[in-house]
Image 1: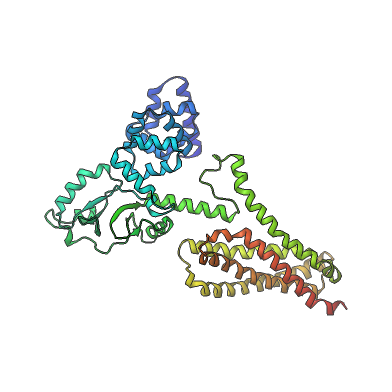
Image 2: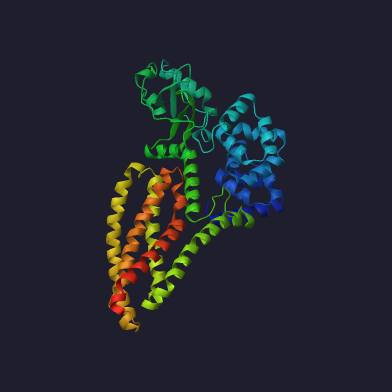
Length: 462
Protein backbone atom coordinates (compact mmCIF):
# COMPACT_ATOMS: atom_id res chain seq x y z
CA UNK A 1 0.00 0.00 0.00
CA UNK A 2 1.36 3.43 -0.96
CA UNK A 3 1.66 6.17 1.66
CA UNK A 4 -1.21 8.18 0.17
CA UNK A 5 -3.50 5.13 0.14
CA UNK A 6 -2.54 4.36 3.74
CA UNK A 7 -3.41 7.88 4.84
CA UNK A 8 -6.75 7.72 3.04
CA UNK A 9 -7.54 4.39 4.73
CA UNK A 10 -6.56 5.78 8.15
CA UNK A 11 -8.80 8.80 7.59
CA UNK A 12 -11.66 6.54 6.50
CA UNK A 13 -11.26 4.26 9.56
CA UNK A 14 -11.11 7.29 11.87
CA UNK A 15 -14.30 8.63 10.30
CA UNK A 16 -16.05 5.28 10.73
CA UNK A 17 -14.86 5.09 14.35
CA UNK A 18 -16.43 8.46 15.09
CA UNK A 19 -19.67 7.12 13.60
CA UNK A 20 -19.27 3.83 15.56
CA UNK A 21 -19.73 1.98 12.28
CA UNK A 22 -17.77 -1.13 13.33
CA UNK A 23 -19.35 -3.36 10.71
CA UNK A 24 -17.89 -1.24 7.91
CA UNK A 25 -14.51 -1.05 9.67
CA UNK A 26 -14.44 -4.85 9.98
CA UNK A 27 -15.17 -5.25 6.28
CA UNK A 28 -12.55 -2.66 5.32
CA UNK A 29 -9.61 -3.94 7.40
CA UNK A 30 -10.20 -7.60 6.60
CA UNK A 31 -9.88 -6.79 2.90
CA UNK A 32 -6.35 -5.46 3.51
CA UNK A 33 -3.17 -7.50 3.40
CA UNK A 34 -1.79 -8.24 6.92
CA UNK A 35 1.22 -6.00 6.25
CA UNK A 36 -1.09 -3.10 5.38
CA UNK A 37 -3.33 -3.78 8.37
CA UNK A 38 -0.25 -3.66 10.59
CA UNK A 39 0.79 -0.30 9.13
CA UNK A 40 -2.71 1.04 9.71
CA UNK A 41 -2.79 -0.12 13.35
CA UNK A 42 0.67 1.32 14.03
CA UNK A 43 -0.59 4.72 12.86
CA UNK A 44 -3.76 4.69 14.96
CA UNK A 45 -4.02 6.23 18.45
CA UNK A 46 -3.41 3.91 21.41
CA UNK A 47 -7.08 3.88 22.47
CA UNK A 48 -8.22 2.78 19.01
CA UNK A 49 -5.71 -0.02 18.32
CA UNK A 50 -7.33 -2.73 20.44
CA UNK A 51 -10.94 -2.15 19.26
CA UNK A 52 -9.82 -2.24 15.62
CA UNK A 53 -7.61 -5.29 16.16
CA UNK A 54 -10.55 -7.21 17.65
CA UNK A 55 -12.45 -6.70 14.39
CA UNK A 56 -9.87 -8.70 12.42
CA UNK A 57 -10.68 -12.30 11.53
CA UNK A 58 -8.87 -15.01 13.47
CA UNK A 59 -6.39 -15.74 10.67
CA UNK A 60 -5.77 -12.09 9.80
CA UNK A 61 -5.30 -11.14 13.44
CA UNK A 62 -2.27 -13.40 13.95
CA UNK A 63 -0.61 -12.41 10.65
CA UNK A 64 -1.24 -8.71 11.30
CA UNK A 65 0.12 -8.96 14.83
CA UNK A 66 3.39 -10.46 13.54
CA UNK A 67 3.84 -7.56 11.09
CA UNK A 68 3.25 -4.78 13.65
CA UNK A 69 6.00 -2.73 15.30
CA UNK A 70 7.31 -3.95 18.66
CA UNK A 71 5.67 -0.98 20.40
CA UNK A 72 2.29 -1.83 18.87
CA UNK A 73 2.71 -5.49 19.77
CA UNK A 74 3.57 -4.65 23.38
CA UNK A 75 0.56 -2.35 23.64
CA UNK A 76 -1.77 -5.12 22.42
CA UNK A 77 -0.16 -7.79 24.58
CA UNK A 78 -0.70 -5.65 27.66
CA UNK A 79 -4.35 -5.13 26.64
CA UNK A 80 -5.20 -8.72 25.71
CA UNK A 81 -7.14 -10.98 28.02
CA UNK A 82 -5.56 -14.41 28.56
CA UNK A 83 -8.05 -15.94 26.15
CA UNK A 84 -7.25 -13.37 23.43
CA UNK A 85 -3.51 -13.84 23.92
CA UNK A 86 -3.79 -17.62 23.63
CA UNK A 87 -5.97 -17.32 20.52
CA UNK A 88 -3.35 -15.17 18.77
CA UNK A 89 -0.44 -17.37 19.87
CA UNK A 90 -2.21 -20.51 18.63
CA UNK A 91 -2.41 -19.02 15.11
CA UNK A 92 1.23 -17.87 15.00
CA UNK A 93 4.20 -19.85 13.76
CA UNK A 94 6.80 -20.67 16.39
CA UNK A 95 9.64 -18.61 14.89
CA UNK A 96 7.40 -15.54 14.86
CA UNK A 97 6.53 -16.13 18.52
CA UNK A 98 10.22 -16.34 19.40
CA UNK A 99 10.97 -13.12 17.50
CA UNK A 100 8.29 -11.31 19.52
CA UNK A 101 9.53 -12.77 22.82
CA UNK A 102 13.03 -11.43 22.11
CA UNK A 103 11.62 -7.90 21.74
CA UNK A 104 9.30 -7.88 24.77
CA UNK A 105 9.97 -6.97 28.43
CA UNK A 106 10.11 -9.75 31.04
CA UNK A 107 6.56 -9.34 32.33
CA UNK A 108 5.10 -9.72 28.82
CA UNK A 109 7.35 -12.72 28.08
CA UNK A 110 6.06 -14.48 31.20
CA UNK A 111 2.45 -14.06 29.99
CA UNK A 112 3.33 -15.44 26.54
CA UNK A 113 5.11 -18.47 27.99
CA UNK A 114 2.27 -19.06 30.45
CA UNK A 115 -0.35 -19.12 27.67
CA UNK A 116 1.66 -21.49 25.48
CA UNK A 117 1.05 -25.22 25.61
CA UNK A 118 3.84 -27.40 27.15
CA UNK A 119 5.20 -28.57 23.78
CA UNK A 120 5.39 -25.03 22.37
CA UNK A 121 6.94 -23.81 25.63
CA UNK A 122 9.71 -26.40 25.36
CA UNK A 123 10.35 -25.51 21.72
CA UNK A 124 10.53 -21.81 22.56
CA UNK A 125 12.98 -22.44 25.38
CA UNK A 126 15.10 -24.60 23.08
CA UNK A 127 15.33 -21.91 20.40
CA UNK A 128 16.11 -19.19 22.95
CA UNK A 129 19.19 -21.17 24.05
CA UNK A 130 20.92 -20.63 20.72
CA UNK A 131 23.59 -17.88 20.49
CA UNK A 132 22.47 -14.45 19.33
CA UNK A 133 22.53 -14.03 15.53
CA UNK A 134 22.77 -17.79 14.97
CA UNK A 135 20.63 -19.80 12.55
CA UNK A 136 18.87 -21.39 15.52
CA UNK A 137 17.33 -18.07 16.52
CA UNK A 138 15.56 -17.57 13.17
CA UNK A 139 14.60 -21.14 12.30
CA UNK A 140 11.17 -22.68 12.65
CA UNK A 141 10.58 -26.20 13.94
CA UNK A 142 7.35 -26.44 11.94
CA UNK A 143 8.46 -28.49 8.93
CA UNK A 144 7.25 -31.69 7.23
CA UNK A 145 9.26 -34.79 8.09
CA UNK A 146 8.90 -38.02 6.07
CA UNK A 147 10.43 -41.54 6.14
CA UNK A 148 12.31 -43.01 3.18
CA UNK A 149 10.36 -46.31 3.21
CA UNK A 150 7.02 -44.50 2.82
CA UNK A 151 5.13 -44.54 -0.45
CA UNK A 152 3.94 -41.39 -2.21
CA UNK A 153 0.40 -42.06 -0.94
CA UNK A 154 1.62 -42.34 2.66
CA UNK A 155 3.53 -39.08 2.25
CA UNK A 156 0.45 -37.25 0.96
CA UNK A 157 -1.62 -38.64 3.83
CA UNK A 158 0.97 -37.35 6.27
CA UNK A 159 1.12 -33.90 4.62
CA UNK A 160 -2.68 -33.53 4.64
CA UNK A 161 -2.77 -34.44 8.32
CA UNK A 162 -0.14 -31.96 9.56
CA UNK A 163 0.07 -29.27 6.86
CA UNK A 164 -2.23 -26.82 8.62
CA UNK A 165 0.34 -26.35 11.40
CA UNK A 166 3.41 -26.12 9.17
CA UNK A 167 5.00 -22.94 7.83
CA UNK A 168 5.83 -24.51 4.46
CA UNK A 169 4.96 -27.86 2.89
CA UNK A 170 6.58 -27.60 -0.55
CA UNK A 171 9.94 -28.85 0.72
CA UNK A 172 9.72 -32.04 2.78
CA UNK A 173 12.65 -33.53 4.68
CA UNK A 174 13.39 -37.24 4.89
CA UNK A 175 14.69 -38.34 8.30
CA UNK A 176 15.17 -41.60 10.15
CA UNK A 177 13.83 -42.59 13.56
CA UNK A 178 16.60 -40.57 15.26
CA UNK A 179 15.81 -37.41 13.23
CA UNK A 180 18.98 -37.81 11.15
CA UNK A 181 18.61 -35.86 7.89
CA UNK A 182 19.06 -38.24 4.94
CA UNK A 183 17.33 -36.50 2.04
CA UNK A 184 14.68 -34.14 0.68
CA UNK A 185 11.69 -34.34 -1.62
CA UNK A 186 9.39 -31.65 -2.95
CA UNK A 187 5.65 -31.77 -3.44
CA UNK A 188 6.37 -31.57 -7.18
CA UNK A 189 8.45 -34.78 -6.90
CA UNK A 190 5.54 -36.49 -5.15
CA UNK A 191 3.02 -35.34 -7.74
CA UNK A 192 5.13 -36.71 -10.60
CA UNK A 193 5.35 -40.26 -9.19
CA UNK A 194 2.80 -43.04 -8.73
CA UNK A 195 1.09 -43.48 -5.38
CA UNK A 196 2.75 -46.83 -4.68
CA UNK A 197 6.31 -45.63 -5.40
CA UNK A 198 8.59 -45.37 -2.38
CA UNK A 199 10.25 -41.98 -1.98
CA UNK A 200 13.64 -43.69 -1.43
CA UNK A 201 13.64 -44.29 -5.20
CA UNK A 202 13.62 -40.62 -6.19
CA UNK A 203 14.45 -38.46 -3.15
CA UNK A 204 17.43 -36.12 -3.28
CA UNK A 205 20.12 -37.56 -1.03
CA UNK A 206 22.68 -34.76 -1.43
CA UNK A 207 21.28 -32.19 0.97
CA UNK A 208 22.60 -28.68 1.56
CA UNK A 209 22.17 -27.81 5.23
CA UNK A 210 23.53 -25.53 7.96
CA UNK A 211 24.18 -26.01 11.64
CA UNK A 212 22.04 -24.29 14.26
CA UNK A 213 25.07 -22.39 15.60
CA UNK A 214 26.08 -21.03 12.18
CA UNK A 215 25.75 -17.28 11.73
CA UNK A 216 22.33 -16.33 10.36
CA UNK A 217 23.97 -14.11 7.73
CA UNK A 218 25.83 -17.18 6.40
CA UNK A 219 22.52 -19.04 6.16
CA UNK A 220 20.99 -16.09 4.30
CA UNK A 221 23.90 -16.11 1.86
CA UNK A 222 23.49 -19.86 1.26
CA UNK A 223 19.78 -19.53 0.50
CA UNK A 224 20.46 -16.59 -1.81
CA UNK A 225 23.41 -18.29 -3.53
CA UNK A 226 21.62 -21.56 -4.26
CA UNK A 227 18.14 -20.08 -4.90
CA UNK A 228 16.51 -22.11 -2.12
CA UNK A 229 13.08 -21.53 -0.63
CA UNK A 230 14.17 -23.11 2.66
CA UNK A 231 17.34 -24.53 4.22
CA UNK A 232 17.34 -27.41 6.73
CA UNK A 233 19.07 -26.72 10.04
CA UNK A 234 20.82 -29.57 11.85
CA UNK A 235 22.70 -29.99 15.11
CA UNK A 236 26.34 -31.07 15.41
CA UNK A 237 25.31 -34.72 14.88
CA UNK A 238 23.31 -33.98 11.70
CA UNK A 239 19.95 -34.37 13.44
CA UNK A 240 17.20 -32.22 11.99
CA UNK A 241 16.17 -29.40 14.33
CA UNK A 242 14.38 -26.94 12.04
CA UNK A 243 14.35 -24.98 8.79
CA UNK A 244 15.03 -21.38 7.79
CA UNK A 245 12.63 -20.10 5.14
CA UNK A 246 13.23 -17.44 2.53
CA UNK A 247 10.94 -14.89 4.24
CA UNK A 248 13.12 -15.07 7.36
CA UNK A 249 16.20 -14.64 5.19
CA UNK A 250 14.82 -11.46 3.63
CA UNK A 251 14.44 -10.00 7.13
CA UNK A 252 18.03 -10.98 7.97
CA UNK A 253 19.43 -9.42 4.79
CA UNK A 254 17.49 -6.22 5.45
CA UNK A 255 18.75 -6.06 9.04
CA UNK A 256 22.35 -6.71 8.01
CA UNK A 257 22.21 -4.12 5.22
CA UNK A 258 20.70 -1.55 7.61
CA UNK A 259 23.37 -2.33 10.20
CA UNK A 260 26.20 -1.99 7.66
CA UNK A 261 24.83 1.30 6.34
CA UNK A 262 24.58 2.66 9.90
CA UNK A 263 28.13 1.64 10.79
CA UNK A 264 29.51 2.97 7.50
CA UNK A 265 27.85 6.31 8.32
CA UNK A 266 29.41 6.27 11.83
CA UNK A 267 26.12 5.60 13.62
CA UNK A 268 25.56 2.84 16.18
CA UNK A 269 22.98 0.42 14.68
CA UNK A 270 19.52 0.31 16.24
CA UNK A 271 16.69 -2.19 15.87
CA UNK A 272 14.15 0.62 16.11
CA UNK A 273 13.06 2.63 13.09
CA UNK A 274 14.02 6.29 12.85
CA UNK A 275 10.54 7.48 13.87
CA UNK A 276 10.48 5.09 16.86
CA UNK A 277 13.75 6.42 18.28
CA UNK A 278 13.73 9.28 20.76
CA UNK A 279 16.15 12.19 20.35
CA UNK A 280 18.16 10.75 23.26
CA UNK A 281 18.49 7.39 21.51
CA UNK A 282 19.66 9.07 18.31
CA UNK A 283 22.10 11.22 20.33
CA UNK A 284 23.45 8.14 22.12
CA UNK A 285 23.93 6.28 18.83
CA UNK A 286 25.79 9.12 17.14
CA UNK A 287 27.88 10.86 19.78
CA UNK A 288 30.48 8.10 20.48
CA UNK A 289 31.49 7.90 16.84
CA UNK A 290 31.61 11.66 16.39
CA UNK A 291 33.82 12.00 19.48
CA UNK A 292 36.19 9.28 18.25
CA UNK A 293 36.41 10.83 14.78
CA UNK A 294 36.86 14.34 16.18
CA UNK A 295 39.73 13.24 18.38
CA UNK A 296 41.35 11.22 15.59
CA UNK A 297 41.04 14.23 13.27
CA UNK A 298 43.30 16.24 15.60
CA UNK A 299 46.21 14.42 13.97
CA UNK A 300 45.43 16.38 10.81
CA UNK A 301 45.72 19.62 12.76
CA UNK A 302 49.03 18.53 14.31
CA UNK A 303 50.47 17.79 10.86
CA UNK A 304 49.40 21.21 9.53
CA UNK A 305 50.87 22.95 12.60
CA UNK A 306 54.13 21.04 12.17
CA UNK A 307 54.63 22.01 8.51
CA UNK A 308 52.80 25.34 8.45
CA UNK A 309 55.90 27.53 8.64
CA UNK A 310 57.79 25.63 5.96
CA UNK A 311 54.82 25.60 3.54
CA UNK A 312 54.33 29.36 4.01
CA UNK A 313 57.94 29.94 3.07
CA UNK A 314 57.51 27.90 -0.10
CA UNK A 315 54.16 29.42 -1.21
CA UNK A 316 50.99 30.46 0.62
CA UNK A 317 49.06 29.07 -2.35
CA UNK A 318 49.91 25.54 -1.22
CA UNK A 319 47.38 25.82 1.62
CA UNK A 320 44.57 26.40 -0.88
CA UNK A 321 45.26 22.93 -2.35
CA UNK A 322 44.98 21.06 0.94
CA UNK A 323 41.13 20.69 0.94
CA UNK A 324 41.19 19.33 -2.63
CA UNK A 325 43.86 16.77 -1.77
CA UNK A 326 42.15 15.62 1.41
CA UNK A 327 38.69 15.40 -0.17
CA UNK A 328 39.92 13.55 -3.26
CA UNK A 329 41.94 11.12 -1.15
CA UNK A 330 39.01 10.50 1.19
CA UNK A 331 36.62 9.93 -1.71
CA UNK A 332 39.06 7.57 -3.43
CA UNK A 333 39.53 5.55 -0.25
CA UNK A 334 35.79 5.39 0.39
CA UNK A 335 35.13 4.09 -3.14
CA UNK A 336 37.54 1.20 -2.61
CA UNK A 337 36.38 0.39 0.93
CA UNK A 338 32.67 0.34 0.08
CA UNK A 339 33.29 -1.92 -2.93
CA UNK A 340 35.36 -4.37 -0.89
CA UNK A 341 32.97 -4.32 2.09
CA UNK A 342 30.07 -5.19 -0.19
CA UNK A 343 32.11 -7.96 -1.81
CA UNK A 344 32.96 -9.41 1.61
CA UNK A 345 29.32 -9.22 2.72
CA UNK A 346 28.13 -11.12 -0.38
CA UNK A 347 30.92 -13.69 -0.19
CA UNK A 348 32.38 -12.51 -3.51
CA UNK A 349 35.69 -11.62 -1.81
CA UNK A 350 37.41 -13.97 0.64
CA UNK A 351 40.56 -13.62 2.71
CA UNK A 352 42.50 -15.75 0.26
CA UNK A 353 41.73 -13.13 -2.43
CA UNK A 354 43.69 -10.42 -0.56
CA UNK A 355 46.61 -10.23 -2.99
CA UNK A 356 44.30 -10.32 -6.03
CA UNK A 357 42.23 -7.46 -4.61
CA UNK A 358 45.38 -5.48 -3.78
CA UNK A 359 46.82 -6.00 -7.27
CA UNK A 360 43.56 -5.04 -8.97
CA UNK A 361 43.00 -1.91 -6.84
CA UNK A 362 46.62 -0.84 -7.31
CA UNK A 363 46.28 -0.92 -11.09
CA UNK A 364 42.93 0.88 -10.92
CA UNK A 365 44.40 3.49 -8.57
CA UNK A 366 47.31 4.22 -10.93
CA UNK A 367 44.92 4.84 -13.84
CA UNK A 368 42.64 7.04 -11.69
CA UNK A 369 45.56 8.90 -10.13
CA UNK A 370 47.13 9.58 -13.54
CA UNK A 371 43.87 11.00 -14.88
CA UNK A 372 43.19 13.12 -11.78
CA UNK A 373 46.74 14.49 -11.55
CA UNK A 374 46.75 15.54 -15.22
CA UNK A 375 43.40 17.29 -14.79
CA UNK A 376 44.66 18.88 -11.55
CA UNK A 377 47.78 20.22 -13.27
CA UNK A 378 45.71 21.70 -16.09
CA UNK A 379 43.16 23.19 -13.72
CA UNK A 380 45.78 24.88 -11.50
CA UNK A 381 48.04 26.08 -14.30
CA UNK A 382 45.48 27.11 -16.94
CA UNK A 383 42.33 27.97 -15.01
CA UNK A 384 43.59 29.22 -11.64
CA UNK A 385 46.97 30.45 -12.87
CA UNK A 386 46.25 32.06 -16.26
CA UNK A 387 42.51 32.70 -16.18
CA UNK A 388 42.18 33.96 -12.58
CA UNK A 389 45.68 35.34 -12.13
CA UNK A 390 46.84 33.25 -9.18
CA UNK A 391 50.58 32.65 -9.11
CA UNK A 392 50.42 28.91 -9.79
CA UNK A 393 53.72 28.33 -11.55
CA UNK A 394 54.32 25.06 -13.39
CA UNK A 395 56.53 23.67 -10.61
CA UNK A 396 53.88 24.37 -7.93
CA UNK A 397 51.32 22.66 -10.15
CA UNK A 398 53.72 19.75 -10.60
CA UNK A 399 54.22 19.36 -6.83
CA UNK A 400 50.47 19.40 -6.15
CA UNK A 401 49.75 16.97 -9.01
CA UNK A 402 52.41 14.52 -7.86
CA UNK A 403 51.05 14.71 -4.30
CA UNK A 404 47.56 14.05 -5.63
CA UNK A 405 48.82 11.07 -7.64
CA UNK A 406 50.49 9.52 -4.58
CA UNK A 407 47.47 10.31 -2.36
CA UNK A 408 44.98 8.56 -4.66
CA UNK A 409 47.15 5.45 -4.99
CA UNK A 410 47.70 5.17 -1.24
CA UNK A 411 44.05 5.95 -0.48
CA UNK A 412 42.89 3.14 -2.77
CA UNK A 413 45.31 0.67 -1.19
CA UNK A 414 44.30 1.66 2.34
CA UNK A 415 40.62 1.63 1.40
CA UNK A 416 40.70 -1.90 0.00
CA UNK A 417 42.99 -3.40 2.65
CA UNK A 418 41.38 -2.06 5.83
CA UNK A 419 38.08 -4.00 5.47
CA UNK A 420 39.99 -7.21 4.66
CA UNK A 421 42.24 -6.66 7.68
CA UNK A 422 39.14 -6.12 9.84
CA UNK A 423 37.63 -9.35 8.49
CA UNK A 424 40.84 -11.24 9.29
CA UNK A 425 40.66 -9.90 12.86
CA UNK A 426 37.04 -11.15 13.19
CA UNK A 427 35.66 -7.59 13.13
CA UNK A 428 32.79 -6.19 11.05
CA UNK A 429 34.44 -4.74 7.90
CA UNK A 430 31.85 -1.93 7.90
CA UNK A 431 33.47 -0.55 11.09
CA UNK A 432 36.46 0.65 9.07
CA UNK A 433 34.34 2.21 6.32
CA UNK A 434 34.19 5.80 5.12
CA UNK A 435 34.71 7.82 8.35
CA UNK A 436 37.82 5.97 9.53
CA UNK A 437 39.23 5.58 6.02
CA UNK A 438 38.78 9.31 5.44
CA UNK A 439 40.50 10.21 8.71
CA UNK A 440 43.50 7.99 7.94
CA UNK A 441 43.77 9.16 4.34
CA UNK A 442 43.53 12.83 5.40
CA UNK A 443 46.58 12.45 7.61
CA UNK A 444 48.52 10.49 4.98
CA UNK A 445 47.66 12.94 2.20
CA UNK A 446 48.93 15.89 4.25
CA UNK A 447 52.21 14.15 5.06
CA UNK A 448 52.70 13.19 1.40
CA UNK A 449 51.87 16.72 0.22
CA UNK A 450 54.24 18.37 2.67
CA UNK A 451 57.19 16.10 1.90
CA UNK A 452 56.72 16.28 -1.88
CA UNK A 453 56.42 20.09 -1.74
CA UNK A 454 59.52 20.41 0.43
CA UNK A 455 61.45 18.07 -1.86
CA UNK A 456 60.50 19.59 -5.23
CA UNK A 457 59.99 23.33 -4.70
CA UNK A 458 63.12 24.66 -2.87
CA UNK A 459 65.45 24.47 -5.95
CA UNK A 460 62.98 26.53 -8.01
CA UNK A 461 62.46 29.15 -5.29
CA UNK A 462 66.14 29.71 -4.42
